[in-house]
Length: 322
Ligand code: ATP
Ligand code: MG
Image (tube, rainbow, N blue to C red; front, top):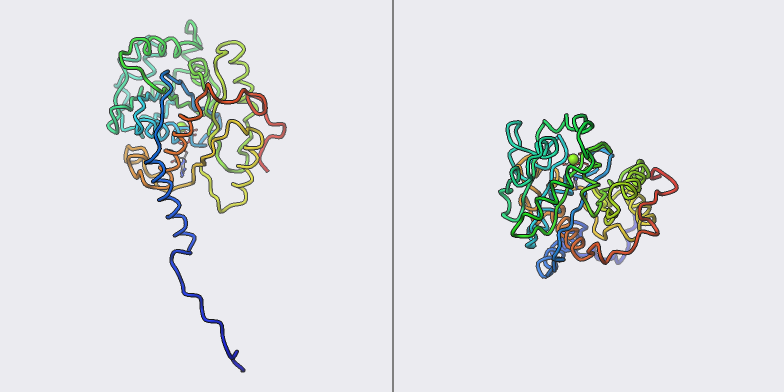
């Protein structure tokens, strides 16, 4: 067979041109800009409930990693673990066995929050009101309590006004349901953060969630607003993840953060070491994304955010991502 006379010289192979190398360079640049960023805290306490009745969408992961990121830039943060699973307490390295005073005692037995708060070993700025297994019975026990929807709010108001050093953020991790525990969180918060997993059915159930929020605004807490939507477990290699992200941004252009949390093994490994990914591997892609999201949350302070007209607490017409 005849060979070509002047075969084109093979392009020299450069490691710098591989997708992995580009990803690493991008991550390094983002880490550098995070180090250079200076943030200004609002001077008031923002109470943010992290809710979505859909299970496994990244509520707890978002709560603890945003909390740790906020603490790492100097904010004083309290995480309230309102899920009987106690995953947020575990991830923050806070003991929460059945004998430990917990948020259950606050809701059911009128304990002051100050009596149950622990400091996470990760940072003196990071506090946690833990949950224990007792909380599993609280949904039912709350039904017969006086002011059952306002018990968390009353306790939190008391706690915040008793502090000599103001908290910058309170983050509430909700269970995957719209029961009385979540309603207590809605009644206590000024802001709602909804994590949305970039998967099929991402938007399913959202109209029910937003309907509940409207009801809470009308009857229990007019101060509650949907301030933030965070896209989680994003896998940019799939068309589906990109489509879901686009669809959510279309419905909620003002609420969705620019930052997207990638699917990352380091993020899922961290809780088994009783750590957030910020402490476990602060340079990893998941940690960098959560730190960027936290900076965005500080910068897009609720007071500056656009009013809820386009997306707001209104449901998308068409449920379910296609
Ligand atoms: P639940 O409804 O049970 O409370 P949740 O909404 O709090 O769940 P998480 O517990 O935060 O969801 O996350 C569900 C699972 O997905 C966990 O195993 C977690 O480690 C994993 N996970 C969350 N975010 C990521 C990510 N960015 N990359 C990889 N795994 C993740
Ligand atoms: Mg959870």
